[in-house]
Image (tube, one colour):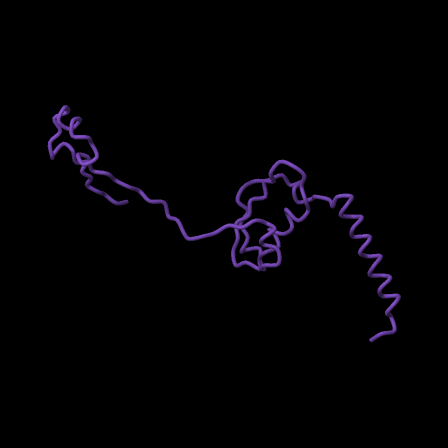
Length: 127
């Protein structure tokens, strides 16, 4: 908490100060300011955080309206090495953690698996 003495007369137009008969004593205000304990911090999107390991994070798992993606939940929760370094900001729907991959994502995973199998068959004798 800090206390300041502020001269309000400087902010008032001359005609107002004269009309209100404000003198130097009555134009001074005592102001008390209470500061919040803030620390330097930053934020980033889920997509920006992919591939990074972070020290300590605060995650908001309340999803915005629209289609949900598995990465929207998995990526922010997996950015820390220890559970103690993760703080979930507010209550969220448990169903958020149980997102299933979309049909398109499943199809893409199957396609990639098929390519991997064909590659293994083709190059199994090469060391």
